[in-house]
Length: 460
Image 1 (tube, one colour):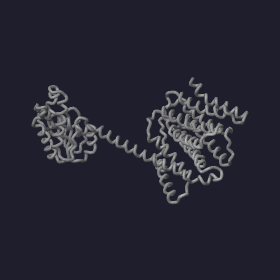
Image 2: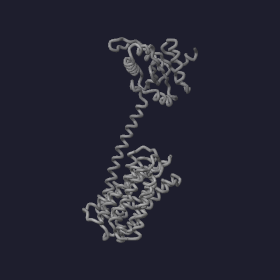
Image 3: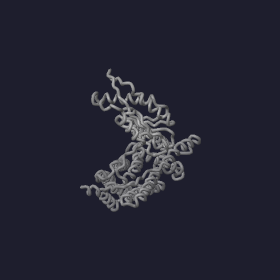
Image 4: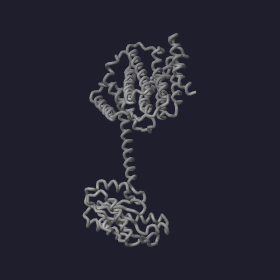
């Protein structure tokens, strides 16, 4: 069944081409029903793709062809039945939406397993709108004689080839990056065929030679059918990552206010339709900036949380170890503290009371330390402190920390007394500061001396 749906679009296209070669006259059955059945079959083929394909690529490619197909359906109906004047503009807008969606699908078609990133989608729209705005502004009046088509038709007819150029460029970069893989090659071929027939349509329109129902109309379908074959094939794992370079995004954003400023300084220099992509680019750029700021804030909060003890709000072991890396050239000491008689508190009063004791211990330690010290909870009932200062100053701070636990804690009217064993390792340039402080702390705990320095622990 999968193979049937995959090759259904190309089969319908071959039937349509064969009929048009035999009979070039317009037909409701051939030019409306059969023609539009081909892009519908292409969407069905893509949605039946193997599960190995990136789901976002499948969704965006299907939507892209769907929007293009709606535009095609409207234009096809208008050739057989009179529609409202706005229908042509609606069809053109659907054609426009096709391009950014396909631009977002191309990288994911070749790199499986990437998470959906709204920035990536916004970049596709910003890049496409920005480049199309400057290209339209520079070449609009030179390409189209005013006597042929309206300014609105000029704008859209030129906009599509510009989008095609962007798609072909991105597809070509993908092809080179993925070392001419089969999937990348068919993707590039589909985008190129579609773009070439857009250029042919542009040339015919400029020369007033385009007629609905010609064989040229099958050129767009050929490109779409090739794209459907690409997206419906099994996708292999790839480590390559294709994305639009930030420089091009910045250039696209810079273009919009420049064009708006030129339009304000010299009215009439550009078509009024140039305001659509420029304003849209600025609006999307504002949304992108908002998302980036929010993501940066969230990332900052997550980074802080990753280095913070949840119970006490103090830095955790990871933060203390990170601080040690920059502490090697600082005069000071590392203190490791282990609470005495804390386990009986948990056993006799429960972990809720134990947690309250740890919170109050952290508050007492924080108040007794000099400014600039780093107090961290290492886990359980262990704490670590980095203190700047001479040997005498750090030793004095260690005894001050011991003194903070000399009077009991009162929890729910119950006095609870605990002590602390402190190991001090003065920073003398050696790299084993943590090991020396740990050895001193265990010596203090074993002998019940309260505070032991690493030099004394070594001499024992």
